[in-house]
Image 1 (tube, rainbow, N blue to C red):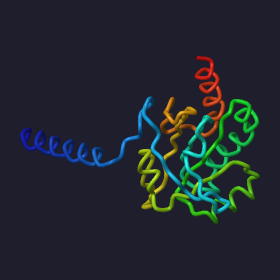
Image 2 (tube, one colour):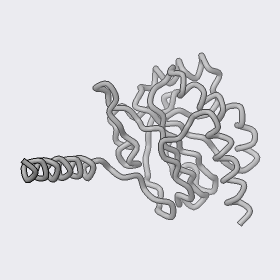
Image 3 (cartoon, rainbow, N blue to C red):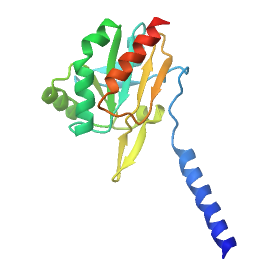
Length: 177
């Protein structure tokens, strides 16, 4: 019986390891940020290379109109002037479509770009994809990208409440170097 239990445990561990290996991993700090082009809530294509020379806060979030995502978006909006002063732009990405983003921005008074990734291409590139209740969503991860396109800070499974403050503090520290 002990041998059977041990074999079962080994098989379970091997299966879980194989599943984890199939999940894309987020790019690490120091890596070149993967290039992308996605439509914004305005329907125009937005590419990372449009922001060469600026800092980019690229944040992934699960779903428009949900409580955590609304809190996170409001906090970035609240601090938008501070980001502008630091030569930084905010780009939000979810798997919602352009119309959903447009409604979310209108309802919540958001003035930064939300990018639609319904085909999950960019969330995959950034290792920011998850399954929740049978739906494929973006995981709540953020990448702070420097003006030359290099990822300087990676935030995984962030808490929406104080996240903007955390990013601003790190941006301040990185710019002081």
